[in-house]
Image 1: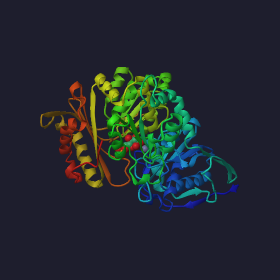
Image 2: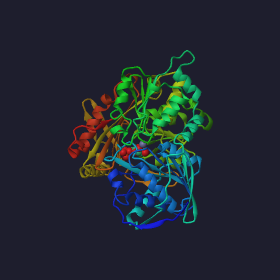
Image 3: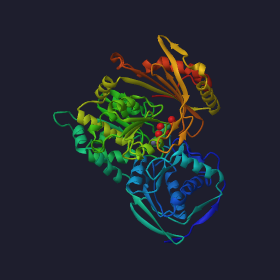
Image 4: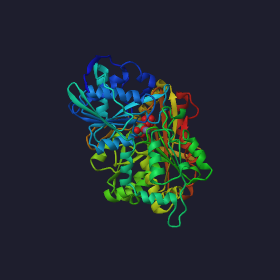
Length: 562
Ligand code: G6P
Ligand code: ZN
């Protein structure tokens, strides 16, 4: 079919600055005339010389407005001289899957349609994220360029008459302005499942679930929260690993995630926690809307804090074929993440990196062959098999450990603490606060960071005493390309190694969300079984007072405690 493109005039919109992970706004914002078109044009224009003749991947978590966005992207890529698109069937691809497909087919990048763990639906959020050719989220240099273009955009290119059916797997050929243009609709899960089978020992995991060597079967409960992982979970756990139908729930992706917040934490995945509490299951997991986050629970809803989850995986890499083959080059975590992985790195004698919040900061280290496994407190866990965090990967990693070590989730954690001591960790979220007072609070904390009289200050609560050793606003220089990221969160480091971190979320779509991260390390075995909330309470109270958070936000209690 021969088609021609046109150039349409437009005007810039304010606020098209990608956040921690792409541009996230209310669906209604994206539905404004030309809003989506503008941003897509800026993504394409930012590719400059790499755009013409390139191949890109397009897919998302299936949320409301996803199909409309795919249609716009296809028409605009055609007009912008992209040579080929690999599109997930019905526009569906999990974020880790997009990353894997970009890498496998060496495409120039991909466009991911997701607002991750934010709610979906006509009155909720949508998002567009650009991933570069390594499969990872675009680094700051690229997103700043996209934002710059969005402030001056005057026109965009589109091929309005191009009609493409994304409901069927297969290749569709077009001629646009005399140039060939191909849309290949790919099965949403095939590539990903094949890849997981290369990384993990599926027969061993199957043996764990079904019971082998005199071990009883492990009953698992996997909750997809009506996000994109549903079809991946069904294929992997039911078809490949032979789990029973009642092992998986909420596996039908819904445009509004059933009206829920598709975020796998103790608050928003409360149904998983409840179901696990009755003790019928030995292992539970949930994923977020686009499948990159995970929460791991053991028997009776024993909670694995994400900072510990990645440390346990890093400590047990001999249970996973991918690492047996490739070795472990280095480990990393984001700054607010609890430091348990640092101890594993020290014991293994490998480098450990502390990067700002955001998976994009791990990419360069992985590309340089210095980083194999990393994680974030925000329920992100992953490795250099792709350049995104990967929820299902994390579950398969855990099941591999349980299969080889013949242990349980809880025992694996206790064993870990026995070896390394325990980094108690909690995070308090104050969601959707007014932005101005939160910014004022951060500014005040920032000024504390440059006030030398703060150093040595004693802070007490009950019989707990802390002394401030250092305060800073975290700054990171990328060891590979020297890029500098400033003001990434206030760190208050205590003389006993405890840490308090304040950050404003970069993934919200309106207002401000304050995050308070608290960590303290204990080597005394008698403390290991204590509740993290109880152990950390004094430091939480001290931090709330120091920052005047309650007064500033008007909130007495956090929205979510992790
Ligand atoms: C996304 C990113 C993560 C990051 C998280 C932080 O999920 O992919 O890498 O940790 O956002 O979110 P926040 O709301 O704290 O900025
Ligand atoms: Zn996500």
